[in-house]
Image 1: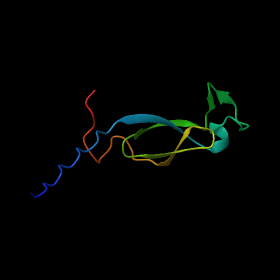
Image 2: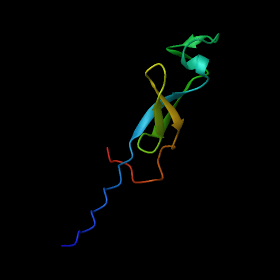
Image 3: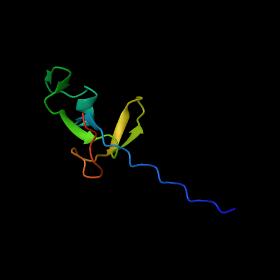
Image 4: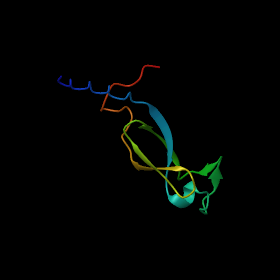
Length: 81
C-alpha cells in the first residue's frame, strides 16, 4: 500500500482591515497634540491586507502590526464583496 500525497490547502483569501498608524504616544492618547475625535491629527487610518500582514499580541491586549502588506494585496486575489 502506497500513500498518496495530500492535496495542498487552498491559498487563504485576502481580506482588508483598517488600522490606526502613528506615534505610540498619539495612539495611546498620551501626546500633547489637540485631539480631533478619538485621536489627534498625527494618527491616520490605513488599509492593509489582514491575511498577509503580521500581527502580534501587545502588552495592552491589542494586536500590534509588525509587518503590513498594503491593500490592495498583490499576493492573492481579493475576496469579492
